[in-house]
Length: 223
Image 1 (cartoon, rainbow, N blue to C red):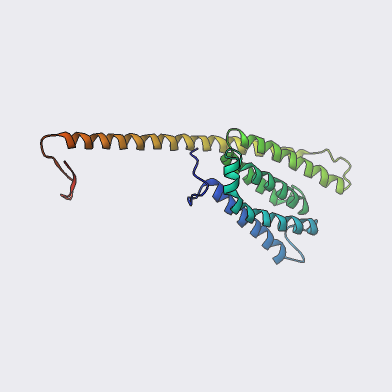
Image 2 (image 1 turned 180 degrees about the horizontal axis):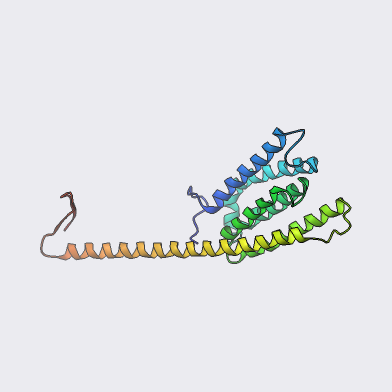
């Protein structure tokens, strides 16, 4: 996919994801504090949830300003650090909200999908594997805290991991097709520009005077 300079004001995928993180952390913070003392999220471990969401908020805001620096230092993998931070923060938030059986697990699917777009090559598959290990560790940790007789029963996290890999594969294929279409469009625009320049040179070198009018009888080309 064609890289756009970090200082551009265009809505690049990394910039869109950065603002998504701000909206996400704002929503998670608002839901928690506005529904206190009976929060809809973080009800299992409110202290862990509050600490995680506050740190995550600071990192998400700081990332908007640090992205150009990371882009210059690590042009290929500058998007990996925010993704890894998101996986860690969301895993803690999910744990504090009652584990992966809650509705917050879908947020990790969004993170994996974003990684498949932002990271080069098979970076999305790496993130899918990393996220799968994270949710398995969370379920194991949660089972131990509940004194579960079989903490290694990881069926839910395994199925969730499969959804991560399916998401990574599908989004990667879509992103690759879009990149190919974008490259073809650029090549076609370049060819059209060359043909226009060639036509202009031919007209300028003709000994006969040429006037080209459009449908509204306005002159669009002359030698």
